Image (cartoon, rainbow, N blue to C red; front, side):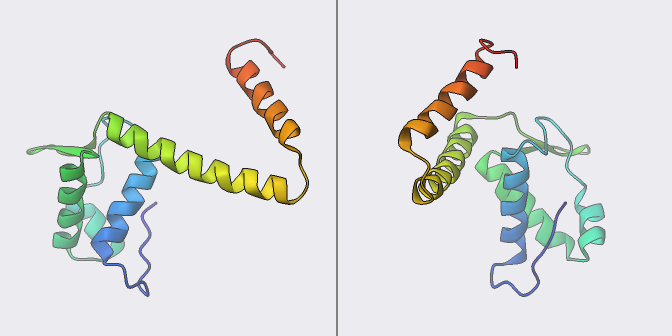
Length: 128
C-alpha cells in the first residue's frame, strides 16, 4: 500500500504524505480509519520512525488525519478542502480523457451523450 521510490529526489516523508493523500482521496483509506502505527510502518518500510512521524505531522497539519494520544492516527472526516482537491484531480483527469477522445475522432456530441447517459443512471432514470 505504501511504496517508497528510493531513487527519487523527493524526500521520503513527502512521498509518504502524497501517497497517503492519494489513498484518502481515492477512498481506499476511509473516514476515521486507523493508520498503521509509526513503529509498524517504520518496520514495514524499513525507514526511520522519525520520518513516519514527520509525514503524519504534516498530514495532520493539512487536515487529512487526526491523532488521539495513546490510540494512534486516524483519517479525518472529509472536509471541503479535501473535497476541492479531489474535484480538481477528477477535472484534470477528465480533461485529459476528453482531449484524447477528441483527438482520436470522438465527437463532442458523442461525449455529451455519454455524460448524459451516466447522469441519467446516477439519477435513477435508467436501471440498465
